[in-house]
Length: 128
Image 1 (tube, one colour):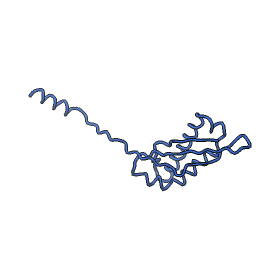
Image 2: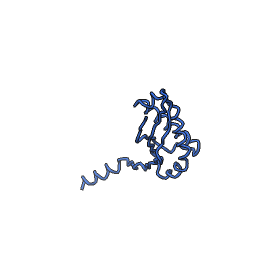
Image 3: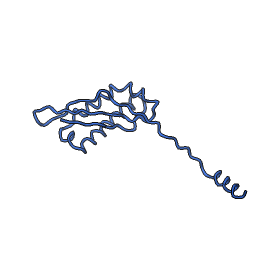
Image 4: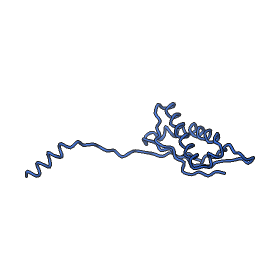
């Protein structure tokens, strides 16, 4: 009986923290993004990529979907300004991904008052 009472007192004294599972959603741009980049050679360089947005709250999926044309255009503009060396290097791709993520968050903040996305992911990347 004393053990049970002691257990109840200890449990009552412990602070309860409620941990909620993250309610993320993913938005993918369809069709894939295909755009040119600044090539050094006379040959035209292009990139085909798949972009996914990790949305912090699944309730904001429709808001992000509504702004998809604006976000897609921003991503295409950023990639189109990149030099060939950056497009073809792993570190360069990470830099491009970071630039795109910052731009998308900035545009969503400008349009909705919140960044709405946690992460921008390049899930496929093919360059010529």
